[in-house]
Length: 302
Image (cartoon, rainbow, N blue to C red):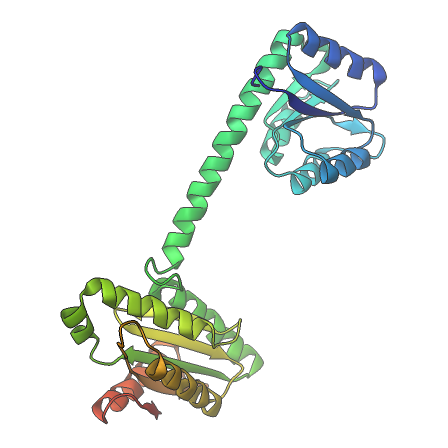
């Protein structure tokens, strides 16, 4: 706890004597804190919905809640707040489960004094900060593992996982599934003529244009380089071709800056019962090759 600024501590405790004892301990340690006491979990949750606080001291045997679900409900309401569990029962196994459930510490009421409480509060805050930082780092790594760093859409690895899932769904429910692969025409000339920074700008702009013109549940990914995939659940090949034409036209008409225009070639196919991910992608790639071989800036279907 930082003694240089006023903290708000929510004490959820139904025993007035225990609540008074906690307040006296904090005063003895000169903790500059505003202690708010509620006697029921429901009252504590109501307080958290309407007010800010820095920490929760929690009695585990309340009139309206007991056990580990109490911690869970508090963390759902305030996931960033450190929780110290207070209990009159010495049960090491329960203490371990309470910490696993998300509490930062576990104190026996009969064993604590002001010094122990203050120290526990300090370390609870520090552990919660570390927990949040670790989660943010883990989330970042998970995002980097599935998101293309340049365009912000799915990368090839994530697309392959989603493709397998959609193929299984299409087989199970006998529903339609189509795939579009498109490639920016003569993209090497963009990099060579205007610079790789401009090329990166074009890729990001294309990703945004397509994202703005597909459905929320369509799966859009950068396949590699200047190649992209759009997986379209519950859509047949004619719908995929119509969408491809829309995207082709939008790309062709778009000014990427200083009069720069870029076109794209599209390959389209539809899932059939004999397909696996490799055959579906290979057929779409073959359709794209035909589009490029037949003049580019066009759509071919197989």
